[in-house]
Image (tube, rainbow, N blue to C red; front, side, top):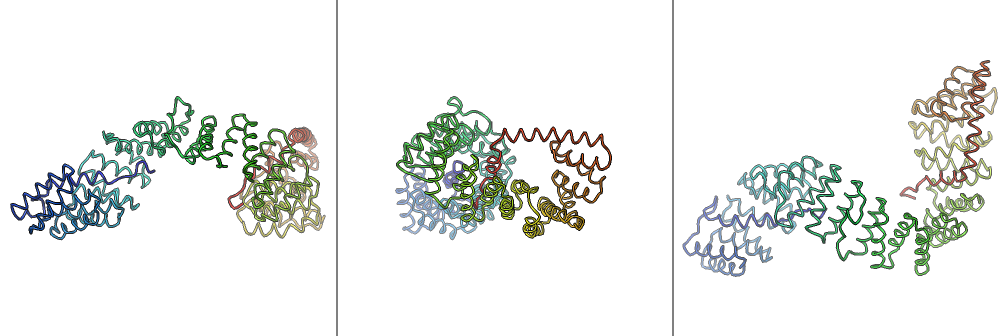
Length: 610
């Protein structure tokens, strides 16, 4: 996050301080002449008071007079750096290295300059050389660790910054950079320990970084209440930071706190339309629609053509019970800027308001405006299907399957359209295609089972090769093993005494082995055992199916039939009575839930590829 990214100002400050003690330092010869010493002292005084141009004049004069002292070149590099003359500064620091190759100072200052200009690989090399010459040089260790951190070499960065911390325990910059490196190394708990050992600096900019990093680490550790508190303190110092405000809102919402006016401060002034929109979306995702609405309104005020802001505002209106306001907003917008997205949203709002004819018209208009959008075809077909106009629904999904042949839900819609008018063979073909497109989807498999009991022998013959290929391609998929085994069993049953049950039995047994909690497979396997007159095995499978799905009326019915064949009439009567009760409840539920098909298909969300 940008609000806690490091800067190099702290390193520059350290180098300026160190410049005051370079005369006579390791690897540096003392000033060559009394004049050179005097020039150095004079230039240093000017540099420390911000008179960089005057300091350069003194230094250049001494060099022109013959002084070749690394101390002067070091000051010259610092002065040029302060003036933004980076190339001249680099040349000066390289001259320091030439004149005093055994001193860490020239390498350290060069590293700072290179790092400031974003040349982090070269900076790391300079800092590494300085650290080799002076292993406990704090600035070299801090600079090397920071450069490695920026280069995403977290392990090396942590090692260097830990050594810098050991040299100066409690130093803010060392602790801060070490915490950043540990966080990048996916060690937030360790990072927090170092942050806890440093205090928030008095400098506002550093304090903002400290509290922001503390907030980020708290979020990493799922301590959202603490994170919110840290971000709040950072935002109090820097109330113009949009990033910090977003982090404050995010952590407050994650902590489960309602973002009322009393809880959250006002956002920064003069946000852009995109910032207001993003903030509104963040609030909406957390269900804080009342707080999101002003942000979407402001985004629209700043950018009246922003359809995303319009759509999000309409959704927020709808979510707080103001559906009429949402409809009015979209209708007003599409007069000026008709779009498929807004018409499709309007169709959904019309549907919820009970305006079914208007909903169909809106969904149709969305398809006309954007005929390449799979979602719009799906929604239009769903509108027809949910109101039992199966012919138009089938036509929409027929076109949809042609335009979007890799969309499993288009084939599901087509399949349910056929199923509703008892075109079971056509429904089975479409269901199977959906399964071929998305063989790992439990929901698609649930849809495929819809026609299991309605197909004629010739229809199973057409589907078996396809089911066989899927089962072979996905040998660990219990549902595909069941699909092929059940289809093959139905076909063999139709042959009467000539039916061969070994192969379907192997697939059904494989299905329950792969997925023991599979009531449909136990039910089908029970039927196969019953067909083979293996009554005890059939009873065991039916009882297991009932245990897993106590409301399965078919399982109770079939178990009752087996008990009757075994002459266990009391048990048979109990099971058949239970079947009658469950069957009646099932029929009542179907009558009450007229939108069951709609809800089922709607649960099949679009995939990214669709």
